[in-house]
Length: 318
Image (cartoon, one colour):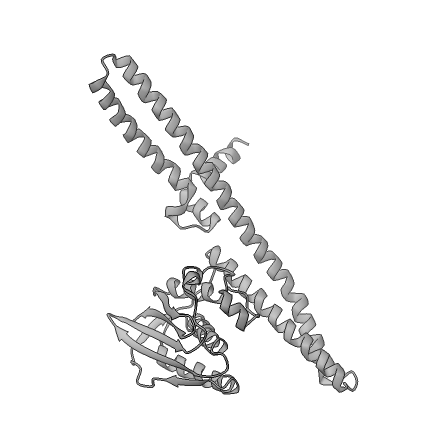
């Protein structure tokens, strides 16, 4: 019993383990903030005592004032840290809940998808035109739900620090060419022209190609989706200061000035985006920026409402 209590005490004193449990960076962890504030209180108490002995004749009174000040600061710090700890625990439980629910939803959605494919194939009987229309609607909504569940799982892994990266050296220019070739039919159907600068740098980057691919696909899909059925999407890769810079510019609806500060937040969608496209979870850009930053790069954008947007990200050169 005493051994278990001692181990529990040691685990609570392990700041790194506690921060990992909450999925927080070290500088945001409540268990680190408390000792830092304790040191600060000790320094403030010493300074208060030195000042007190200088301006107060009675040393006992100066000592009493210092002790009261230290007790007040310590109690305040304890309340603040406990509040932060409860918030961190609530955030951890929320992430676990999202992860569990998303995992549980994957199986029934997969079963629904396979059942619809079987029904639409005609193997269980002839499908008339009206039935085919309904099956198509069900299939499209199932695909949307599967995409949302997948995004929620990725967000949960990002928040818990469990998103896996299998880094390797690859050509960003070649990866972009493959993705553009894949999206050209979709763009053509929306009357969008994709202009790719083929004279991209040959330098290699070190990152997870599958993760970077999802980032580029998200940006390209958004550029096509919000261009309003016309115009062009321009893609360019340049090299600067040991980094490759990917830029994608569209001639779409743009982002209102008041919404630009929230564009990388989870579940956020600007008002004009909702008017043009009701579909979407508001998770894509949050996921994209998280992936880029965990790959050692940065991500940002410029935009003007009614005139389009330019999104960019950097990746370090190998």
